[in-house]
Amino acid sequence: MPCHRFTERERRRTGRVRSRLTDRRKVVAWLAWSLCLACVGLALCAPLLSFLNGGTLAVFFGKRDGAITVLAISFSVVGALIVSHRPGNLVGWIFCTAAVFQASYVSGVEYATYALVTRPGALPLGTLVSWLTGWIWAPGLGLILVFLPLLFPDGRPPSRRWWMVAWLGGLSIGMVAVSVSLLVGLQEEGGTADTPPGWLLVLLQAVSPLMLLAGLLALISLCLRFRRVSGDERQQIKWFASAVALTLIWIAWILLVKQRLIVQDGVLEGIVALTGLVVVPFSIPVATGIAIFRFRLYDIDRIVNGAIVYAALTISLVFAYLGGVISLQYSFRSITGGESQVAVVASTLTIAALFNPLRRRFQTFVDRRFYRRKYDAQKTLAAFSARLRDETDLDALSGELVAVIRGTMQPTSVALWLRPQDGAWNGRT
Image 1 (cartoon, rainbow, N blue to C red):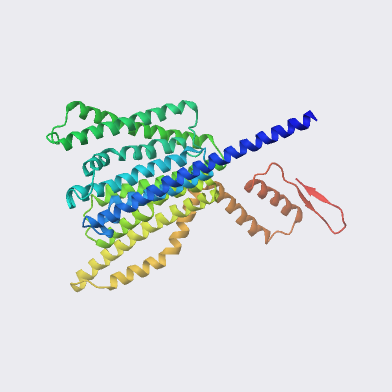
Image 2 (cartoon, rainbow, N blue to C red):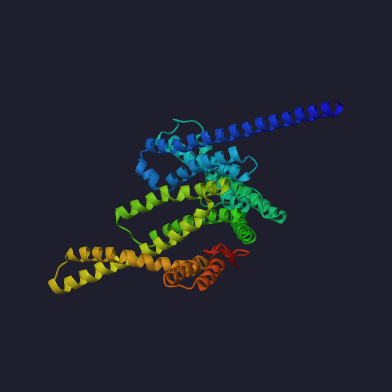
């Protein structure tokens, strides 16, 4: 009887603990989705205020602010999903918090412009919002630059020693925010826009590299984590690294190519803006969500393989097309004295004819260079299939089959059992 009462008491206590955990999880999920709704509302206010400031939606989303708006919405939604299903993972809270800072920045810029420039005095607190937008970008950037790679994917650093990087990142983010806020405040008071105090300039020059150093150390921790782990966690880091690589490639295109080359083609400008608006802002949050929820993780190798092949194929075909058009146009100009559309048609047909052969060559090269184990297994299976059609000796065929299985699948042991017509079993290992 006392044992029965003890069991009932423990059962009730367990039920109360479960109820508290469920209620706490509901509160956490409610808080995360509230932040998400607030962030989406702030982000959607930005294009509306931009329209009231005399701009257009096409111009707004073609600029950096449009990409930040989409980034804030995607970060907030993915962050709320992560917090709802993985409340103990700090990555979800990093996403939600960074999204709030980003949405506040992009909407605050348009709010301050409307309150101070478009219709002065029409909205309250224009000066305060202008001061906030001068430095509120720093926490949002720091969370993504430092804490996301440091704590991905489980919300903890690789070891306790790496918490020093988190403290360094937090200190640098706070110092950048404080120094920039002081500079913006002094500039708004007047008289110091051109000659800020020397100590403030020294502080700004010191803390900005400090935050970049913390971000670099966080990336190093992610690389070391990738080398130490295996299985699902390794695939999670691959998803995140692929999204970061895509973002860095796009940023490099914007900074190194677009700004150095004088591009007069409006279509190309539209394609670049659309790519930056649709692909890049969604890449990191979507890849992080897939990695944390472990949804179809092992498809990342196939995606990376296809991305490398088609990126190399696209670049080669573009250069071949431009070279063909330019060379043929030069030939027609030297022969007939004018340009001809035949050059464009001939180059297009040549590119169409080269597509499949080049794709196969690039696929073979990528498999041989980056996926050597898979490439060797495919070649071994293809060679065995060719020998299978001609081989008549059963013992030799059995030995080759066992060797192929060992070479491609690499099992611990292999056993092949054949049943002859007399009913006796023969085995080969």
